[in-house]
Image (cartoon, rainbow, N blue to C red; front, side, top):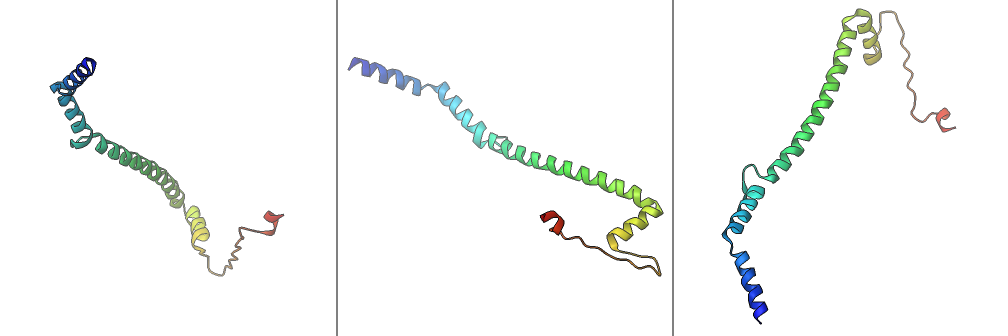
Length: 109
């Protein structure tokens, strides 16, 4: 019985320690309740990662568009682009559009 009383006394003393309560309260506050909590940081980091991926995508698109702009500044490049993308033609000129199917006979054999 004495051992049990000694154990409960030590356990109660440990639980009732004011520094333990303060540290526990501070930890809970900083992890969950504060405006700069761990949960908020985690969501902000996920959002930041998504924005960085978008930034990379848009940077590649900008570089593609800049290359296209340099091609379109030349009149022959502009004419080639208009013929390929918009099927434009000169007067008295015939255009034949050949549309290849994705599953042609050659691919299946």
